[in-house]
Image (cartoon, rainbow, N blue to C red; front, side, top):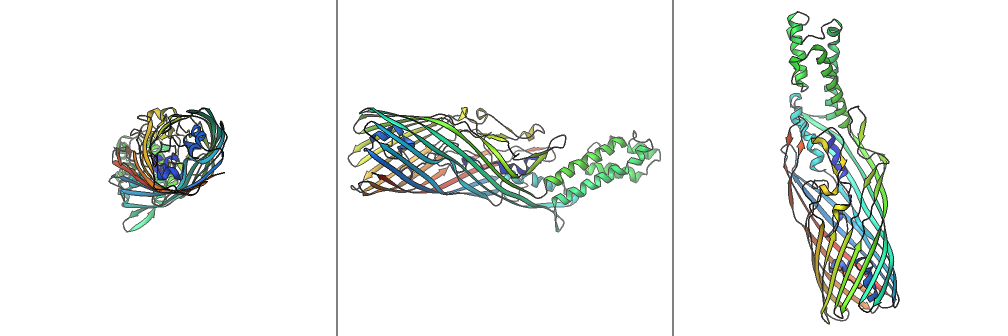
Length: 537
């Protein structure tokens, strides 16, 4: 039953990402939305994309404030034969996704600062759960068929949010007319929250719907009664006899013999007829403990959890301008090592240890690794004409050397709880994305722009689950830049991200111990609307 509630652990940072890495947002300005190729930027959003490129600004103070509104839909389809429905959908929303940048530029030196959601940034609501949430519950139908069970239903809900805010600052220095450098630090503050419930798990018996925990309690009570009824025989010295031997000696009737054996068979004890009466009593009491634990797991539960943590990452940047119409930006961010600590008010019970100790999903005070990977970005801007600028770029994410706190359930191998696994086991190859764009000046005040970005998948099948999955993406963005005054620029645009569907085989261990391997598919799409203003003084 440990898999019953594993659904709730899946809402993590990757939920809102648009054309970035697995846990890193790269859509960090309204200017990016209208032209998703900004790695060689020499505008004020260069605070994030190309800090050394800030030396291309005019002397003075520069400020950029923008917001993106993001809508994302997630679809998971699982073809396990016992599920009520195969298709599960979830909505992820980020109505506020800010980017704030400021820089004071002097002749050879610039001081800059920025604030943005470097990871996460949205909230998700799952009204009907996911396949992993229902797989074990659906197994109850055939497992309890002898009790007349023919169907299941449940009431599940989760509302979660995740945001990793980055606050960064640093300095840029102009070495000469064609070379500038920059260095800074980013302080990342991570925060996840989970609020949800699992209630009213019911099974259909005949024409009636009965609570699953009540059925389990009834079976547990029957098992206890079966074990208690054997005590007089054991006390009378017949404990070492099998029920058949006891019946042959006239200690019990044939009907009593059959009742003992058939009672154990109904509790999935396959070798009941060969057990001694003492062993039969032990089997009855073990079944009582098993079904009592199952009744507890299937009862109403709630979760109210917050996870917080922080980390620091150094940032280095170089800007090269070998000619008047060519600009090259290079940025390297070191890994942000970070752990999130649970602050748990209410928690889900997911199982018990072999000694009966409860295992909860979010133990208060536990830590979850939540690194942001090191990243290298390259960008190139080329002025093909006075009114036409072309751009391209590349991002490379060092995923294998980070720790994302990804979990694997050892349910198929042992009775131990789920544990964190190394990124090297789930990353096929480090992530990367490629982008290109163009901006055309219709006039001195109006600019049209557009662009395209592709990001690879990078992960293997071990990473993929309905809880957390990585998909390759195609992103198209377009919009306008409107220069209302010499020192005031409005950026507005929209982008749409197509996520490439992936299909994997899922290992599911049913209650009877048989491993099934249904196929599961993953798909997402996202719409981004961005608006911002750039000011210079």
